[in-house]
Length: 197
Image 1 (spheres, helix red, strand yellow):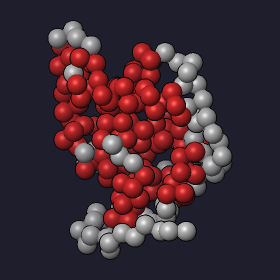
Image 2: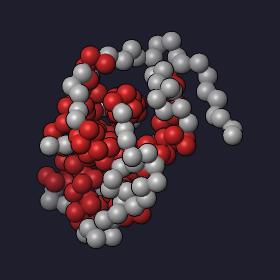
Image 3: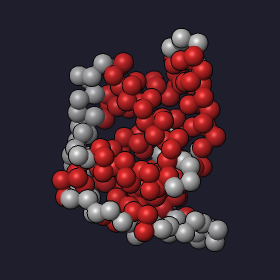
Image 4: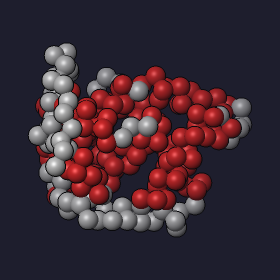
């Protein structure tokens, strides 16, 4: 099997502080966390074109390659989302994998912070002008991509109205803004506990 090789991690890569992510979930909470982490990654993918290569690159730069070693492993982690059509992936997500995915997601969000800020500012502008988000090209593209990916990948994708999916996408856009800033990993980790109640 071919393995993608990455250069050694940048020496300036941020030091991860797991003490910010010390709250431990119950097994049932981990199940719900899988779904939420996957949705946030889906939003990032829709807005910034983040794919598996970028996620694996981030894992190497953060020195988290033991947790997410390759595309197949990443695919199985994401397929374990209970909302997905295919549940052929792993059924369990352990604490280190969850922490690693949170750290990677926030790292990628920070890399794309300017784009995320621009999208949120455009949405605020559309609201103030009483216009639909789709009228702004950046938001329209994001919402279309998110809706298409959601309908394609999620079990209930065809049963939920595009308007409802758009509301999910816009909420995730705001979440990404918070996760892209200082303390983003801690914010995301704590939000996962709120979502899993």
